Length: 126
Image (cartoon, rainbow, N blue to C red):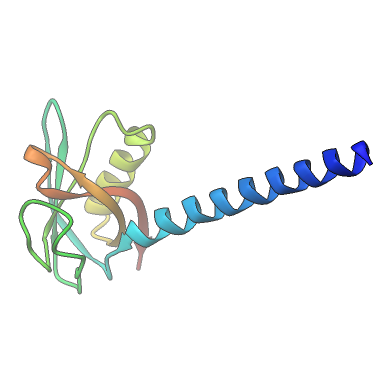
């Protein structure tokens, strides 16, 4: 009977862990947004962040996330503290030089005063 109690307690613990991890994955996915795409007009590189200006395409994101409150922001940001900063920065530069359309995955805010959607992923198309 003691073995059954241990088994039941272990099963309950595993169930809680699975539910908790599922909730974490769902909330992370809910806040991430993807732009529909556009061309990069400029990359403004500074000490603390890189600002990306996108022209064209449907760039609708949730306007309540960042300080500029725009539903269709044309500026996005990445920060050197991002673990994948060099890859993101290189991909943006290559897309700009190649005049490629990019789709951005954003999550949270970055840049000056946190006013711009934070880039966490990039799709380079056409």
